[in-house]
Image (tube, rainbow, N blue to C red; front, side):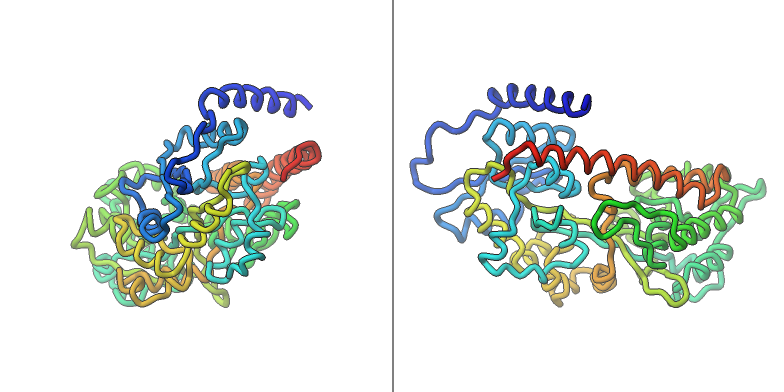
Amino acid sequence: MRKIINTILVLIALVAMGLFLFMPDSKPPEDGKTRLRYWMVSGMTEVPFHITEFNRTHKNIIVESTPLPWNEHEKKILTSILSENPPDLVFLVTPVAKWATRLALTPLDKLIKRDSFDSTIFFSALWEEMKCKNQIYALPLYSNSYAFFYNKKLFGQAGLDPEKPPKTWNEVLEYSAKLTKKDAKGNFTQMGFIPTYGNLPVSSLMAWELGAQMLSKDGTKVNLTDKPMVDAFSWIENFYNQYNIKDVSTFVAGFGFAEQHGFISEKLGMMVLDNSFPDQIKLYNKNLDYGVADIPTFEGHSPVSSTGSWWIAIPRGAKNVEAAWEFMKFAVQKNIQLTEAERQKELLFPSNKLAANDPAFLSLTPSNKIFVDLLEHSKTPTVVPLAHDVFWREFMGAQERVIHKIQTPEAALKRAERIIQMHLNETIEYDNYVRSKVSFN
């Protein structure tokens, strides 16, 4: 009850502030055109093509984009909704369910059904991210993908075939041993692979490959203690039984950004990286001789990658829903996404799989085909949408306890599962209470 009272007080304060910061426009536009306010959390320095092209081809609707700083976007958007003057569209990357459970977004199901909108144009993992309580709240605009990078020069120096990357995680261990070097004092000067270095937990990929189902289909029960999860953490444990965690940590401490990145600086022979890295390699070490391949897996299992989405949605209370929906449908069209991919400086993959599989997109970089193929077999990192931050905090904490030999994989995962489940239960209870008290038209 205290949590509910505190939340209500915060909402009242936000409404009061919003009455001054977000007063509705007093006059309609004199030219009769509908102006859509599009708030974007983005680092883009130029107006995206899907906006400029829509404005060029639609005479009665004008989209006006406004960039939002990351550290203020939640407050600004929620305040605008509470003050009944939200933007018509938002472009975000945080979990859709996080916003939907706040009653901050307009459900799209009626519009989708009315217009027979074809959702099969999207990669399935991305479309699943758009759902909350069996309703659709957004459309995915951009995506990303991960693949396995390996250094061909280092492979050759270690006596490995530069054209044959490892296909299994056991082979990764074997290759890593051959690629690892130490100086006279026993310090690492080069390593083959480090499963805990990078922005993607390799252990999550391993668990998915083995068939882990970390959340029940109804979204109410967390499951981290089944065999696939334990086996994935056991692999990580086995790696650090061979490579002392303190020595590895000292080695990683010497890495940095750009040309000092572990893989780009050629101190690391193999790594799971995202689709932005070919451009980064070209920028910081253009002579790097490397290959991109399928993510390794376990014998008898298929590779799995990870993907997320940058998405568009209509905030609750938006004044121009029909025009906003028209813009959303336009932005995810194949030809629009293709042209945007060709023009943008930082390559973000189209959410439209027809665009992503088009020869024009695949030819942009030699590795695009591998990334796109892996997108078809990807899982979303939004594993527990209603407890997203807590899930990854506890997941990574469990992994740390395993590699530091504080707990066994089973014990670490059991503790993480219990904490995440407790938080999820509280969130579901609060969400149900709010929905019972608030009318949402």
